[in-house]
Image (tube, rainbow, N blue to C red; front, side, top):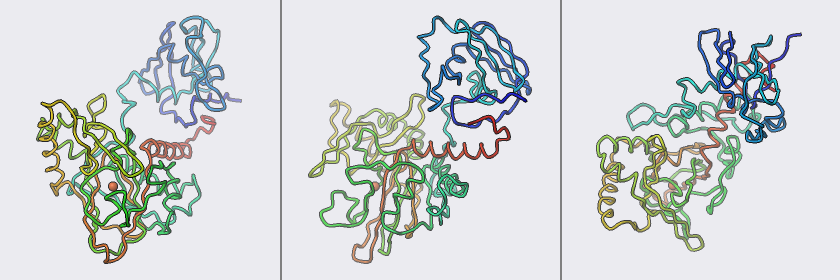
Length: 410
Ligand SMILES: [Fe+2]
């Protein structure tokens, strides 16, 4: 009987794009040539750490248990071959272990090539009002009736998650309008992040409001909860009722605004990436305060998040000479936020659920006439991690369905 391919150190399926053809080794280096001519190089220490056997990975969790520093010396390759199953079979000294590596996994994790492992799961495309459909609308009727983890559930979630990751938002339509059904809908993606406003919050005009959101006044473009060290990555707004006059929703891509600032007003952009503003939400029983620049870049200079909400800003306290430049930059930004070419506008229909990246998109709303009818949105928060994780799982499920080699995963 043909030997099966080995497990991988994860739960994924790794299709074999090309069979390994030849293998060469020296004590600290393995070189694999593949049938399509590609060559991959791996250090012995990297291979040893990424093995999938029981001395390296707990088979119950597939989490690593090996501590490299406990090995008697630097792991070296004593022999290497491609076995009859097509796995890379490698001997390690001084342990005297022979460990097998799945060729699909090994090739996918070749670090010596141009692939960027940190590249976004879906390419990020910034948008303005007229740059094509900023707001993807998808029919999600029946989502709650689908079996969890089923292909029909994935058929609704996959394009939605892709849109959130790429454009920062999506609108699901034709969902139930039952109060609190948002929690069940959200759980199809991932756990909700509770806040002092509750697991779900109700956006409607109410007496004794503890936020401007709970009145009928207009709200300027903002992110929610910039007053937290870690702003919620996602926001979901689910329309249960909307019969008021006014109250049109407005959304802007904060990354598009930041890019325009970088191109047209570099000085203001640079200041907004440096100056640490105060964001404060001081209510009768809570007192949240955080300090941060309004635009944050990652280590590579890519846009990472925006933190903008005029009505949640506390007093700026910084070096005396930095105050006026900070306000100059703020006003350049504020003017840009009023530029209608950035904003898409729409009216919520009962059964609509808009999911958006709260650390990228800005949302706003027009004032509405409180006595003209009812406007009731329920909202909740979630982290970006949940969207990425769910998207990877949906992709994994699809790969597993397509995998021809059923032995390549557990
Ligand atoms: Fe808001």
